[in-house]
Length: 565
Image (cartoon, rainbow, N blue to C red):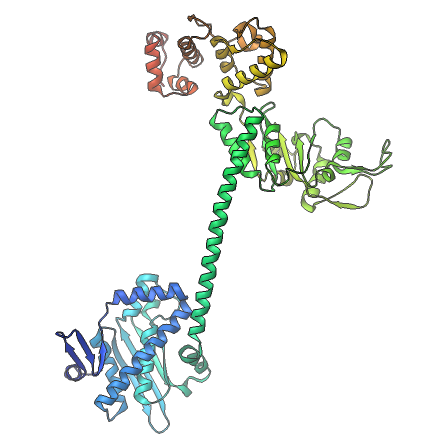
């Protein structure tokens, strides 16, 4: 270490402060004071822009040039008789600049042979502290510019090729930094690495490579953004097409549940993945299947369907995979299976839960291998249809019972669309009923145009175990039995009108009577839960209470002993 008086002398001799001119000089070389935080941010920017290895080399070389120039400048001005005096001055300069507190633990130099050996301790390295602040503890020493500085400074002071290396670093969690310095020959096989870092690596070419890579990344990102925008537009267009398709097919959707189903169908349609449509009988599974096919890339190919529950095991195998002449009695010619027929289109397997285990195994092989073998043949045929399946069963429960292969289930259930039963989407019932009325009246040339309020209440209140198909048949029966433009409660099937309330209104189309009747029905079905009654009507409990007061039903609720739960 240099004693305090020596430091003060060096400060007076070396640093020239000219605040009036806005200048600070280290002898004849202008210097500036920068905050450690600003240098830390610059260092962070270099790492993020160039990568850690390139940033390390840049900072090593920056430090080397800074130290080399300082040593040359001071050597010329002060003319140290002993080069080691100049080396020791580096510690003082760094301390005066607030960069690091340095102490030479060992300093050996043989001018005759050029051998140099040094051990150096640093405390409060600004570079180590800044790295810790931005990145936390690292796995390699991080005081790159300081190591470069001392290497350049000592090299210029001694007129030799000197390199330093950190052996301990605060950036690694150590209490202080430790360095070892040696002349070039003293580093042995490590010398090539030092020369590559300080001299050999073409940083200009490396930075240019990074610039080109960054440009390509930006271009790729821009291309992905354009593709995303295009994809969003395609999805918007597809959803519009789905809406138009639904409108053309007169598929009535009012409930949020069915809106969600259509959204799922529109999203999966363009993707060539397997789809499993689940739902009770009569909910509209086949319509969803046709919608997915119509808006897929395979829309130009055939949509081929088979009901797995309608055929025997032997017939289903032949239907799916085909057969060759003579494979069984009655096989008088070769026949292509549905897998082959639908290879450029969609194969719809309805009631997949009813498929026999042996056919399940062959179906799994067809999906895994992309090939089938006709019954009686020894030759495999490549096939690639899109597979859509449907079931009214709980297929997971069937798997748990051992009646359906789990591996096949996961193959088929690539994307599941669950269609809710009609009783869970009562918002659709009035619109569906009106649409079925319109169709049936037109087909049968009847004058029916509307449903009475009591008839509509009965339709909404009925649980519809047969779902949409049962609703359609019920409305068709009512149209056939109707004697005027308005379908009455008595025109409906007995099971539908059985639990319907008969409201004493002022006419079949009286809206107030309809609302009161709906409220009475909700209170009748949920006599002990105002919350459940409100949920059934799709209103809040506050609105329910207001309706009860409006129609004079609040008092009767208290007399009936209903709770507000």
